[in-house]
Image 1 (tube, one colour):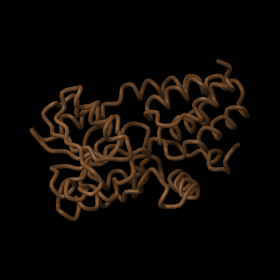
Image 2 (cartoon, rainbow, N blue to C red):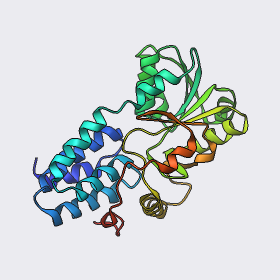
Image 3 (tube, one colour):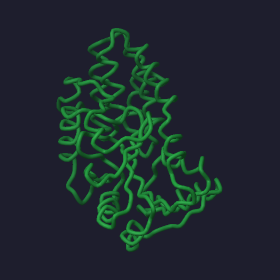
Image 4 (cartoon, rainbow, N blue to C red):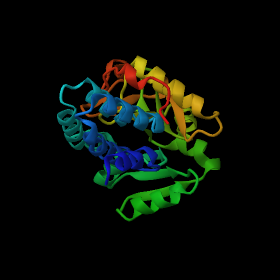
Length: 267
């Protein structure tokens, strides 16, 4: 595939798991490794299409900072492959627990399949829940589908609500739509709310502000497919190194600051 076409393909990708999108983007951006101005433009184009994908912010920022962008892209993918977040989550889940998840969260799914003894309440989001429930059921995970009208009750009774961040900042994360409602109800009911933040998805304040502002400007609150979930709803954060208190997320920064990515969208 021609490098420009490859770049367009990843920029326009929709509904792709974040890890796969980062790997494909690393491959596409490799063609611009010897062209610094072209790499900046290519990174900005990808970011403008995927403002809430933390792994892409991290990949692009690292490549723009690196003396050898190709080697940096390879290193980023290797670190992604070595991420132990799903394993840590599988270890931490209580035996025979009931866990609520909202939307398709690949790291959470991996951990639930690893465990096998957790009952999973799958909150319906459009037509996605049926396929997710079937996916888990086919892997011998005990699944209960939850429709929108029962989300509050599910959040108030589950042992733990699992919130996988697409992008994490110092005070909040972006996670699948309806996650905010589930997390707030669970926190009010005194239930556990765990933020799952895989490798590459935690950014510092400057990057979060730039990404979040542009993401908000794209649509009104009613049309967004992600929720901004405040950190104060969490009881625990699980990431590549294991469990940490929520306050530790303030100091975790996977992504270097790359002001060139903060500029207006590239069309």
